[in-house]
Amino acid sequence: MLVCWLRVAVAAALLLTAAGCAVTQRDCEPPVSGSVAYTGSSVPPPFHVEWTITLDGDRGRFEVTPGYGSAQRWGADFRPDPAATASACTQVVRAEEVDDVPPGSAVIVADLRDGFGQSVRRRAVATGSGDLYTAVKAAVPETTWTEVYGQYERWSDRQ
View 1 (cartoon, rainbow, N blue to C red):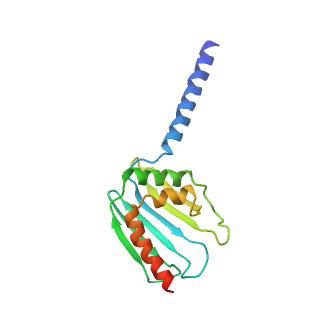
View 2: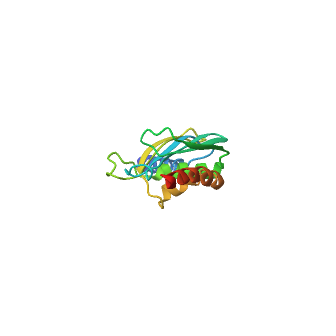
View 3: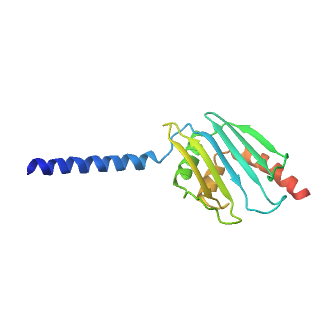
């Protein structure tokens, strides 16, 4: 009987340890590589915007377009902050996957891989003030974001 209880105790401890590992595994570790794409709500240009962040270790690229097949594009390369990209990746992991996007919603689609080799693929609804959007935006240095997104905004204002 004692042997049976010991087996149960060991099995329970192993399950709890595995559960604990699964939770810690959900936090991404640098370096992060892959891409995150944002598609704004379904309004016409010049009000619609799409942007993409591409990460490859110590290199990154941020591009903005009015979307809907437009050839107009603004972009810049940047050096990503490993902590900011890991934080963005972790927010992607925690984001709720959406199969059917509500009409008119803005969407973030991510395909990332962290320093542990953990792959994260997710499509989620995004709001400009939400945790996911804020964390992903912070993966791009503020000066790069302001320069590139500012070019799109100036173009949009002239339309």
